[in-house]
Amino acid sequence: MAARMSWADLTPELLSCVADRLHALAWYVAARGACAAWRSVLPPASPSLLLLSKDDDDEDYYAAPRASAFSLPSRRAFWLCKLPAGASRCVGSSGGWLAVAGPAATRIVLFNTLSGKRVALPRYTWLDPASVSKIAFAPNPTEDDFAVVAACGPKPEDVRQTLAYISATDLATWSIREIAGDTLLADLLYHDAGGGGKVYCLSNNGSVHVLHVPGGRPTTTRPVLEPLLADQPAGVRFNPADFFAPPYAKLSEILSSAKNLAFFDGFLHQIWRNTIGCSFRVRLPDGGWFRVSENEVFVLRHDPARRPNCWEAVPDLGGSSAFVGGALNSTVSARAGEGVPWIKGNCVYWVSRFGRGPVMVFDMQTRRCTTTGLAPPNAASMAVGWYSVGGDVPRRDDDDGEVLQPQQKHMRKFKRNFKKRVRAIDSSS
Image (cartoon, rainbow, N blue to C red):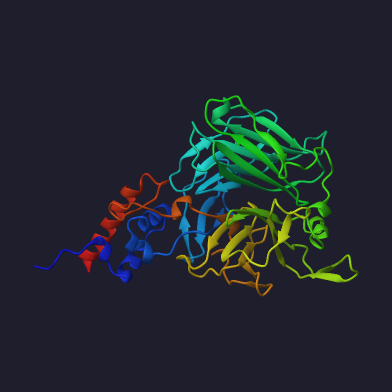
């Protein structure tokens, strides 16, 4: 009698054949989480391009577009759960969740693209969803536990940048904080901290503020907004020369339309990209010239011990890669060589703000920008930005060697369905 074969012993060819029939991203992520053997065969789903598409003959103007994710490692598209009605644009992303809004939406909704769960944020008379440009929020939100920070357009009577904060811990009331200055917010980055969180707010001139989000519930503590450097004088106009060495002090004002924040190896970084559409030169203090190529990328690391010029230009990302751009302006990072094929370390991958055209890559070591040859699978799809599944990074259970997906409680159900598909193919062959 032949020995019973373990599911972990399926041949890579058979496993890949069945995985090709898993069109929903939730199914595919659950399959990768089944066991270490399956995970070693199936490439990760992240990072992915978030794609939105809508039929031209759709008579319902307010109908939500179809959402899908084009995985860069596996080079294939996956279905995502249907977006909430009235949602036409995405303004934030975190671990498989999206923050969506639209012309027909009266409130902002946090939406899980794998399970379909949603958290509708409370309405606020002053906060118009159409005025929100970017949202950062804590991972794994629920109706009873969420923390959200929204970057809003300036008030009609003021030019100051506005942050709107709300959480389930402060009785669901919006709190407004304003950043002095006449620049706009370029990016928001939520970072977990003990007892609460921090939201780093990057302006298009390179200045950074930190919103300290209180932790625990219930609480009446309001978030505290302060400059990144605690000793920075309050109310003093931001001077790039105090934070960036030449020529980056000048570039911080020129390269204002494409800036992002990201953490690499525990350090906060700024990523700047030349989107002007041409090369240019800036004058150096010694009289020379510094040339900036078209689509060139600069990465600066924050070192609080440096005074002045606490932002230092770095030649690489320590083996990691960054993924930026798109209307969502989200930032996703990945480390090359850790089960992520097709991705090269020390590179910045980006897509245009309009979501058309191929994915571009800038190599920080060669200082060259080239095309990857990857693009949305059809002309009707628009690449909104980069998307990452929070549970795509495994946590191993040493008792049985199984790889668990903490964010996917329904993983075992998908695992059972996946095995049924394998059994059906095996019996028919």
